[in-house]
Image 1 (tube, rainbow, N blue to C red):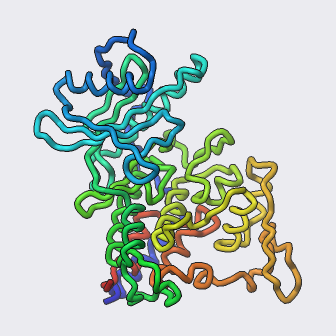
Image 2 (tube, rainbow, N blue to C red):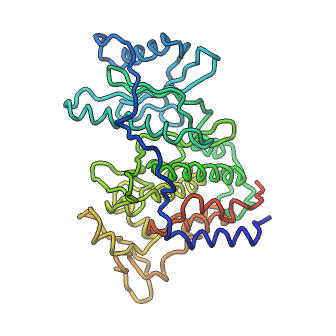
Image 3 (cartoon, rainbow, N blue to C red):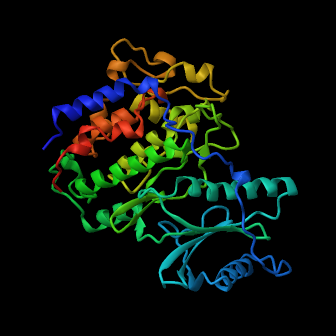
Length: 410
């Protein structure tokens, strides 16, 4: 059963008010990451600098403080337990001494090959994740930080609530087992041989994701790396994790400044404002959330899979274009390529407006580009994938979309 007319009107009214809000929703925490109190651990700094010895030292020290016992290290090429940040970040599983409950221990190290200044900057960046998790804690859709410390050896140790698997793992599981192939909700019949997550689960997890993002954005925090592998599941509840790329807006500011040395979102999940190195807002999380939804129906690859900026620009142009000239005149990327898409329009205008590549009327419809995604999701995704970040609805507004107030079968 679809949502009532009153709820539809609320959604439309909130969209009309989009230009009057910036997504900040509040001042957030008054402290900065540099001001956060850090508890040092009493450890021997003379021990070997090897990673294995450091890890044993960290876990032994936590055990001595009466927090952990019976730990085991788990790595894999993907999913929840991963070691993938230049061998400087690792995930481990341990048990709490007090109640024998499992916890996740995330260890972030500083590269000692860097000079002293860069080592300090790397430590501050590692501590930032601890601060971000502390700032947004308490929301059911955000992984909970239960303990955090920084050691004399400059390791940052985060103790997190345990989770069963990631949303990506769940999508892969349904793909292997056949998932939901009934196509009761408008999925293309050409996808019959590929299992997908049942639509009621997609609805539940996306609602929880947007609720968590709304909380972060009200605290003036941008997550900066939303994707299925960073969304964990615990007892049927989605948990936003990995705040390593998160940023908090300074008081009085509504936009972040792009830097060539640091770009938010994984490559395939970057909207045009990031690719063009323009100032950006928490709306980058909305774009990435849409990419995440799409990835659930094609878990074999990233939704906007590309290996070069040219390929990514072409995909963005096809999905959300034409690309406005603004990104070429006001962006910080002097080598930003224009779309080379040729849509074969009747007027042979294949250069397009603002490098869009082809007439707008000949651009393939959204329903064709994402024909493997159930049709009931198309309107929601189109709203989230607006080329102009100011046109993307806030997370709280999206929660009023008809999709989240529909009774789905699957």
